[in-house]
Image (cartoon, rainbow, N blue to C red; front, side, top):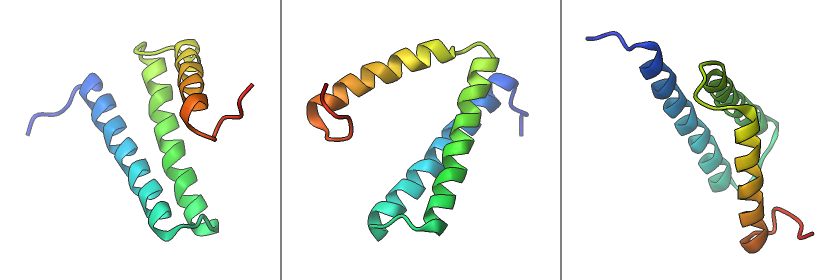
Length: 88
């Protein structure tokens, strides 16, 4: 089996970590609760995804400024159809 280069490792591991975060979110939805145990699992997976985003920045694929700008765009969209963001 061929060894992955840094680029391939970064994106493969990032995808895996995102998938693990999705799994925890879906399990929390099915159980309809966030207790200490599930909050710890959520924190673990969110932290792992954050780590991979940080590595994308370190390796020059993204910048934190660009991520923040995109986050603001998403929040504006959420304000239109979700109650997660209070309307201004």
